[in-house]
Image 1 (cartoon, each protein chain N blue to C red):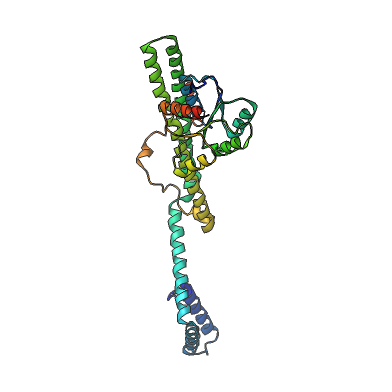
Image 2 (image 1 turned 60 degrees about the horizontal axis):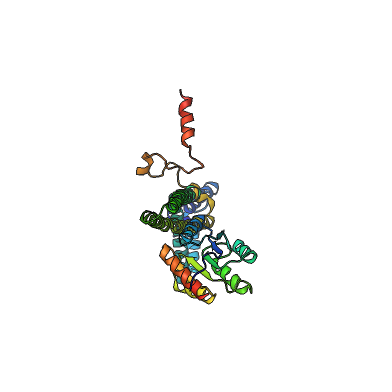
Length: 128
Length: 217
């Protein structure tokens, strides 16, 4: 199934460096409509006010964590089916289980490479 | 034995002085008889203590000694230096590492974005090679995020230690923070070095240095 690369993608991370890296990696794989949010509250506001085909979020944020953002998204009738990829430096099994239980679409462990990002996006969007 | 009952201790000395005073005021009193009364009183007190109470008394004495030794040792650690200087200095330095690496990473990313733009203006193998190279740089730059998270954990640990030290000071009393003598800090190899790199808020930049040097001309 062909992936629609013109979709809006929301990337969420409280580290501006990571936002810039992910935006550039997405641009290299031809996702050019990328918006950024630096915390969960801003992300929710953008998601509720826009039309996003994919969310890529860091877990480790404050005050709203990526997991809480995911739970909010899944609890929102309009947003609940939006593909959601979690990116985190935490690779503990219990975190992956918690994210899966909350309805995460896929999970990327930092540090990651462009190939992993591309592969996970393709897998998630092909099941959407 | 308790301090006041040690031979030559303050209690015995005071008792001797009082006996001498009574002897001077009432020379008719038999000193031997008076000593006998005092000995009887002391013996009675000793006899009143059971073996359990004596052991408990010894334990309390031991505990008191341990506390005194601990206070002395903690004072020698210069705890006020640790909380007032060492830990804040270490956390500031770590914060500066995060800031500087973030700045450097953004500079690298800006250059990569320029290279990506150039790659878009050319075609064929050179374009692919250029984009592959920038991809590798983007990937490598994510070290800054990982490093930042690790350093944040270290800062949190240092702040926890700072809190525990503050609790120890509160428990033992503020007076102990002044027991370590200023100037006793052991001189380390680093004391002979310059203090750089300085934190940005404390540092002079090149233009400040140039102005300073120019002021001597």
